[in-house]
Image (tube, rainbow, N blue to C red; front, side):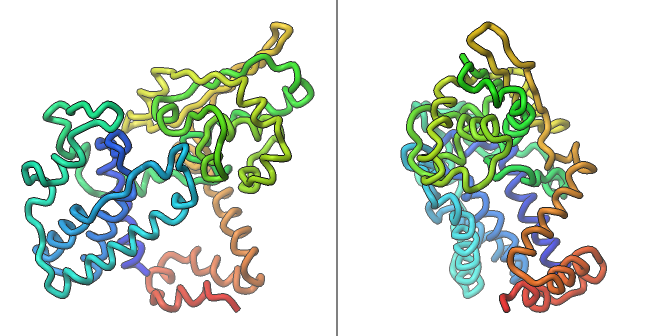
Length: 354
């Protein structure tokens, strides 16, 4: 299991460091490209391939055809979001396997003029097809590969919500008891957020399905404002159809950017994901502006977050296994030395259904 844990750190690091300075959604590509790229590199290492063969495998991942981001956005948001990463990792294993069997690599996969990844897929913005400045047409790296990403990992603990909205949901829960008896008196709701949230999850109008709703900032705020919580079932069609007040509340929302929030989101020393909410009523009164800078799963809230994360893990295990099996898994995960020495097949057998 130590090899698995080390591979996890490497895969997260490759994907995360690439994502820090290179926006794939700005060129219309889905970030599962990075999942496939990182998985290919790490699986090739687990195969114990030579450096030349690892590079050949990575080149195959680069020319393999990359997913369009449209399945994460209206009007095409859908369930592919749930299996896209698994599909990307499985493709990575396939590419490594054929490379290990001798398939040649493509040395100019990134840089070949006209036909390479940079010229075909990375040199133009998808919004207006404008050509990027020359320095922006190649991958940039903010830092060397190490363990930065895993050390700064964001755990999704409190809400089943897209991460740019986690702090907004928390702010909405805080505001709930102050507005629950005045819902009909609300004039407007101002959501103050960062640029990435506006670009990726701010949506108006009809939402097609659960996958569309769980990537809508306004929807993810409306539910906890009304109920005091947000759960996965709140995205389902039946729930939405029975709670028209959600869309009524969405229609009163105004989204604005806070330049400092956007700056701090990109600041390597902060990586905040700030959101703020203020509710205004017809009589001219308003709530306080509730701002939450870091979600509970953030590195800066580790002491608060880890016990909640462990409780979530225990609760999830209890939905599938009897108490003795749950305890066996928990005790093994609590013993780092024993976990690292456990054969992978023995660890996985603990998660087999009875």
